[in-house]
Image (tube, rainbow, N blue to C red; front, top):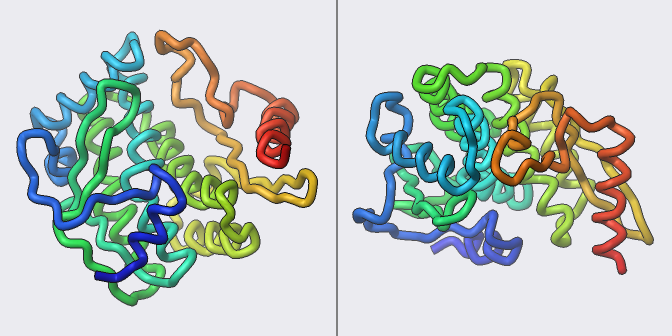
Length: 249
């Protein structure tokens, strides 16, 4: 098996994939989530609503898409950025296990295949065949706004590159990979937020500033995300600078 998976694991839980998965009742096939009427999508929405205490279906959907995009497909983006290989994260090859808490407990692959291919194939597997159809399903089921749902996708994709930069990844390489992916993605995702590069004590990190809101402040936690567009750009950068300072200390 390609040892890219071990190297992804080293970047933390966000990039960890269980391999050679045999789905059972604890696992939800991601392909089922693309059907707006499926019981599996209802199960994911209800789990997030219960965990975060959201008060509306559309707010829950916005939380789900942001969490999903920042966890389920991020390993594929990092594998491509670091090693130029493609991990098959098409919905038919991926399953997830729910957590009792906000987010997902685990993500797994039926077939842990790694292949060579162009960035356009990555865009197809991550966006065209996976995240964008999921956004469509959530919109149909909950009437959550398409632009806000796409904002969650843009945030989640950016998180793949930004989080890795804070875990020792090459900021130059990751920033260039982010812009290359977004250029290939098209569809205006690059206009729903921007990556900024901050420096502190000789260390650099990438951070994302959203231009759409996921409404997480309406949850029981009543907190703004660090990237929330309801905060000013200056406040968000100041808060991110504190994060980077903490990593340097």
